[in-house]
Image (cartoon, rainbow, N blue to C red; front, side, top):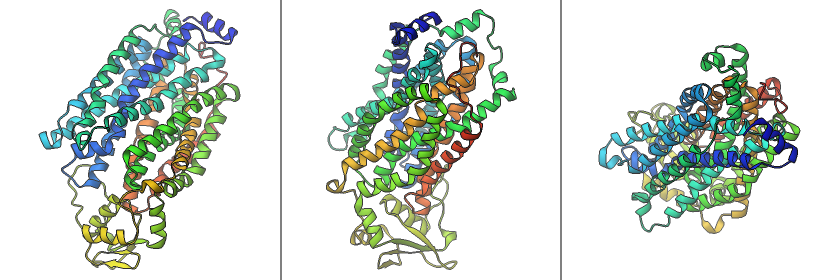
Length: 539
């Protein structure tokens, strides 16, 4: 669509047919791509048992989270590869390639044999496929956001690009709905083979997305730049070798992308892990609650994108970061009280203390599977974490035997049977009691977390596009976005859960997102300029 068409649409106050096609085609393809990417996160617990059965349950789940994070770790490299291509050859064909790579990688996960069939090759191949997914998503978001922004009227760029922001939540919602349908399989069928169905379904989504993207035209801003001979010949050098632009990249990364990333993954992923792994809420119930919150809050991403067209991007982003700092800890305390009140009551009545020589208590994280986490303290920590029981540690004399105090009960010899019997006697539930879950309040807390995420995420795409010039826009905005979301945000569930296991404090892992958001708030407040009145066609 030409700039004149955009101006006419703006004058008329509505969205033209061509603009609707641009938004629909970009957003739908991105929904399918996020669906592929999020399937793994939603099925981390099941995948941990399928591909990491050679280690203990706690380490297996952390391995599964780390493999989930592996896709995020390579996203910046995908941003560099596809960002450079996008600035050199165009937006359309670059993010057409990304969806093909993503769809095929996801389909192959559904065919991959488990650890029981091919041993260590299973997790190795799984990690490789996750890395391919990460490379693809590294080029996807920038392409879609830029493509829509460069078609949008200047005064509606936040509203138009907010549809791209919706796609992440919509992709997660679609993945949860498909998983929920597959969980209707009887017996152990879902855990044995039914979990593969959502991955295999991606081949259909790939066909639809590819057909849609083939029908799209190149961005008018890119074509205009190319016709005027202003195209960059070295996007990487111009983006990161020039201090003026590199400064913007650093502000973008540490000023708001990192904070936005942890609010999103805290709301959409860590909340699910927290409900199922720590509070022991039935996975199907937890998925339904998250689905309800996503449905309720999806319009907020559009609203905050639209609001940023009126009041500016920066005030909306800062509001989200500030609320994240203030409300993350209270929100997860509320989740605990409303989802599994028996845990909080038992902790008040019969606190659990691990009394051990500190040298015998190790960090429950083994990325290469070689550490021997078999001391009595290690076993006690793993058992308590597996049962979702909060505990604190008390230092004993060097060489002293490990003991676990459960209220008035002291266990000198810690084994699974005796510890679980003591926990049961003290009122610690093996699972969250469905009759005691306050479903409306749990949903409300999840809505609160997602609303905070919408504040930071809704205006993000527009601000990123407006920060950088057209000739290096794809490269410059893709790297900080995927460093923030891939490394800072993607590691959040893994780091947070590992900290919970090590400290025994079920809320301790939340320090990670809170500190990141606090730092992002300060940097954005001091160094980030307002962008919403930028003319990106001359920029």
